[in-house]
Amino acid sequence: MSMPRFTRNMAKRVLRQHGIIPTPQRVEIALLLLSQCQHLSADQLRDRIRRRAAAVSKATVYNTLRLFAERGILRQVIVDPTRIFYDSNTAAHYHFYNVDDGTLTDFNSDAVQISNVPELPPGARRESIDVIVRVRNKHHGPEAEVS
Image 1 (cartoon, one colour):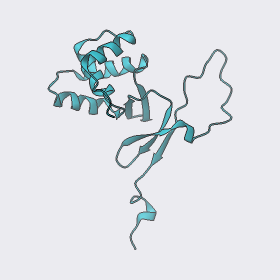
Image 2 (image 1 turned 60 degrees about the horizontal axis):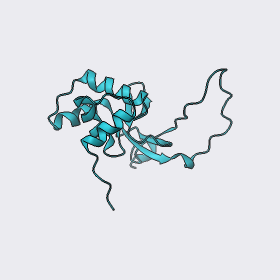
Image 3 (image 1 turned 45 degrees about the horizontal axis):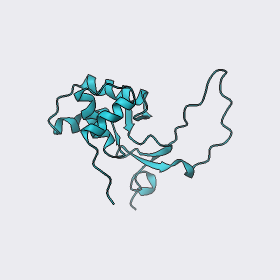
Image 4 (image 1 turned 45 degrees about the vertical axis):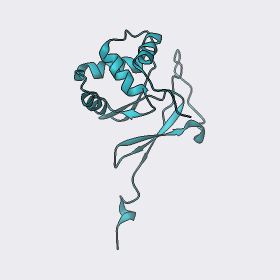
């Protein structure tokens, strides 16, 4: 059975539920991001918006992604200081990051057990624990050398 198509009205409803005014640009970004579970960088999102012939500035894309992450619509996944993905799957899960091709893939958080989490500083509460397992394609590295 297929999932119902994510519509413009559904996007507006999600934005309103999170206290966000559904401007045309925000709705367009929500449509692209929330239509399926995916990991996109701001630049990848902007390219997809352009392909749909929608006019959204770079600043609007970045500001909207930050707002969506702050309001819990998206998860921000920082794989290195220069690479941030926006994850439309906000359920508890972890990631494989392929260093060779720059892709991010989900894996279930039940697959990893984290113990001995240090005591939190006074007045702090744990928001989340992020796990990113960096991988490379098998054909890269010293063991891939051909004799």
